[in-house]
Image 1 (cartoon, rainbow, N blue to C red):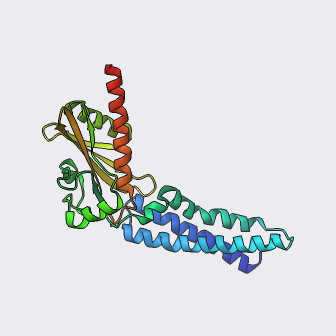
Image 2 (cartoon, helix red, strand yellow):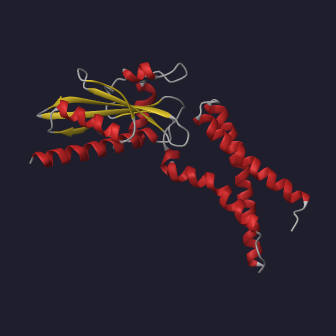
Image 3 (cartoon, rainbow, N blue to C red):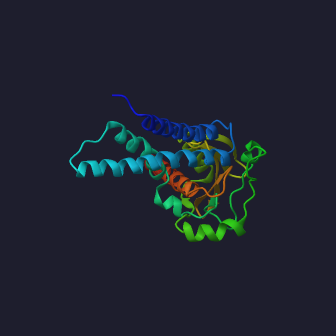
Length: 251
């Protein structure tokens, strides 16, 4: 069955919107375009396919209520057009959109761990590694009061080695370890956009064992949609599990 001209135009417009959306994502990840331009392309593309999805869904439901049939292309518009929203909410979640507009998170607001290897690895267009308490501290306290350092009875040198293992096993690029400062740094690259975030874990003697403080900061962008706080939580959880296993093995 031949499609009329308007149907052809609409189908071309839909796929063009999808191409623009994918081009925005790919352009950011390949570092071929700026983050701002990439997001603009994504916004335009997402708007087009979302409109198609909503209109097609309403039309399909009305057709079903009237006892009619629904053309396959309408369901295709609904499914494909809804994918951007599904991906966003499945990766960021509602809590991510409620996060403050900051991108530098730490378990020690008074004396955050310092980046040294990341300072060399970052490019001219990246954020500086300086921590700005007037921008970050109060906002973090309100949004993530649960972020706390990890304490353990294991000695600091052993915990530092375990922290490096966690970074390696997480697939991060380990930037370096400073045994004098008691720090290890790694860089995480996001799956979809390829955004790079640096993480530093600092291990210091504490009472009869050691204390671990973690800092995670994005190289680009304003707010991080809660990504750095979530990364610190997952890192501490993985390190705590590794420490517990080692203590269990030691008897």
